[in-house]
Length: 132
Image (tube, rainbow, N blue to C red; front, side, top):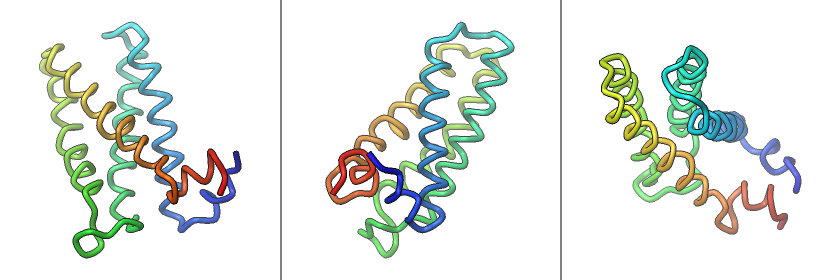
């Protein structure tokens, strides 16, 4: 394992990657920790900001080009940017089940599933974890 391929990439890629890794780790903590507490709300806001950064930073990454400079992953970024405020609004309105569903969906789709696609051979994170 070597971070060199990630660190040698265009600046948006390591920023995006490290923010996604931080969001993943924080998301795991959020899913496991007690809900409705001050730490949950505080860490939740940090997670939302990290996820917004991950989604926005993806628009500067164009390694896979299917429609001009865009790929299906950019649709996931749009989904994330729409669903994040909805999840926050649902928490604010005390719609606990809807909030839970929204945030777990974002975590699963934007971090777990998208993260697995970064491990496809030829992608930077595959090289980071498994070498050439």
